[in-house]
Length: 103
Image (cartoon, rainbow, N blue to C red; front, side, top):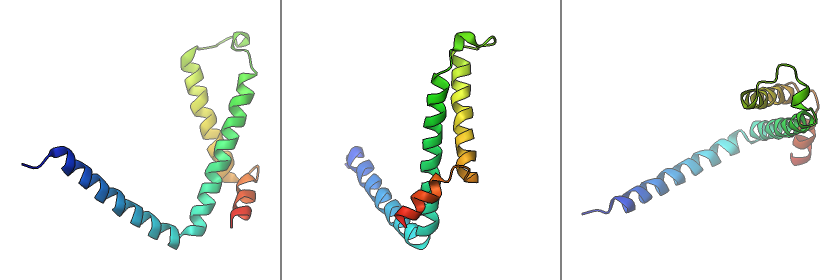
């Protein structure tokens, strides 16, 4: 009888190796575009952190319509989308700087 754990591990290792090979081929063929995408993601992450820090300076007790934890969660998702849009439009230019340094 085959141990199900060993069978699962071997299948996982095979899937992981195949995925790594596919990712390597994709990177080599589209490395320039992949680098641009990673630079955009970095800019989005940076902008989200900046917006989150700015939001922490606000006192929620001064907000007349403060909705509690649900509003905090919504605002976090909203600022994440703002950051993605700002990074995609290149409004700050951080992604281009990172791309230029890494290219």
